[in-house]
Length: 342
Image 1 (cartoon, one colour):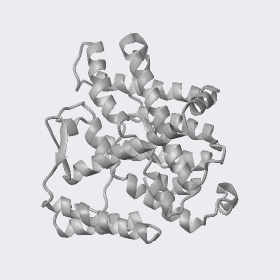
Image 2 (cartoon, helix red, strand yellow):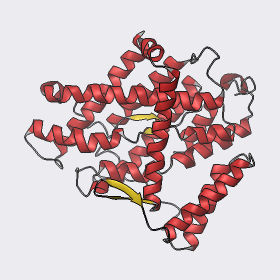
Image 3 (spheres, helix red, strand yellow):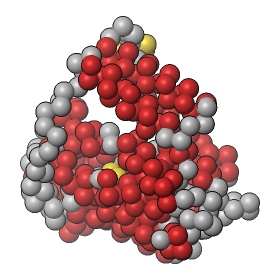
Image 4 (cartoon, one colour):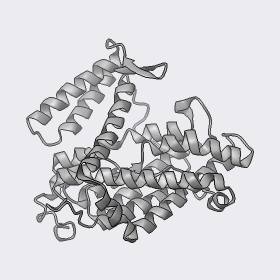
């Protein structure tokens, strides 16, 4: 294991990698709730016709496949799952346009199947770019400052989602304003933030994991979460698996630009995440090159294709993997542990 993952060579240990993988999973686990809520339309008070239960199961499967592939093949400490941003774009843009193309309405099975077809084809295009020199040209064309800006943008977007869910900021007439700070969920958020920040400041490994655990316990005490059952069988994923309508995309030219947009989004999303996490893990060389970056991109592309076949929007590397890197993760073993957790 040490030789395969180059653990000692990268200055890590098996125990540290396992802890890092668990921390990355905990930092990414919100997608198990958010992705089904988005893809089913529940978050936007609409119905796409996709089963919430099946979406939860296939979210786990897509994340497990992508994370394990990243760990075993690319050897990067990057967890993968259906990505934020792309999922919203698929539901609020791709599905309505697919409905127009079909002369149908969002909620019909044919609509979300056609939308998934556009996602799968974007994954194929990304795979082609990953194995051609176009990938290198794209990376070299982007300045270091812009690479960092992409990483920061992804982080700010995720932070905004967290602040909204905590009630710290609320949306009023299209603007974000400060929300009420006296609610129980805000108390949980502030407590978790202070504890995590204090542990990080003292450089305690697993600080984010401990902050999440304390927040969860406090939320349980305050009645904000309830344990329904510790065990249960997963929902049947078969209503979603293999339903992407790839051939249908070629029938409607109006969808072709959406394929290009999704490809553009996943390329720069992956690039930004690799820069952010790779820099923290010390995996980027002095000259700015990325070792094995073609495998990282190819893994992302493969995961996107498999994820679409399972009923999901773009599956991509998560910048939350930086949480595992801060804990000491440096190799693909951390990503593998994340995949096992999913």
